[in-house]
Image (cartoon, rainbow, N blue to C red; front, side, top):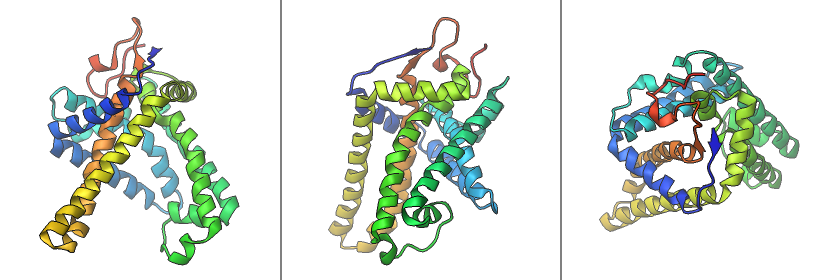
Length: 271
């Protein structure tokens, strides 16, 4: 496995490929994204352990969407079973993915614990358990500081896990090593990932402006309220579809391992 350093403009290409691939199989990709969201939501409802379990399942579920993207990019219709690709693999990979999920859950909960030191746990409780969002709460300086601390700490955490599930699944990298390689890839390709993120922000803003413009033209404000949610879901599904391409272009398999693009969905390389 070799790390590729890509130009900054590749970030735009990743966004374009994500959107294009989504619309090649829009029903499948949107349906799988809804299943992805439902799986994590149901897991989070389990008493006591729900939020931690949902966090632990996130890397495997994200890998499932990446595997679905690879299928769609090949012109195939990804089936629902692709979401559990991480647990259909042979050897030690399912166990390794569970370990990776546990590491993510621990890392995120530690992050929330640090934010709790800032505001007494109000932001962490709202994020993990839910509750009523009030103007009084969100205007508190301690709550706002906790939110910014969480965002600042989540950035390096997301870098560590950005490519990790794919590295574990398709390259057989050990969980801890996958975090190192993922972090290195994100740092070396920071320009492309920055362009990728900014481009997606622009796409989201344009989509929301389009909805509000149409609502204004038809003179029906309720249209904007009704359309915002499904449009946001489609945008999020396209975003997750684009994640596979950030991984595909950041790593190249060496001669002793098969390329991820040469393998059927859910099947890791040998060795």
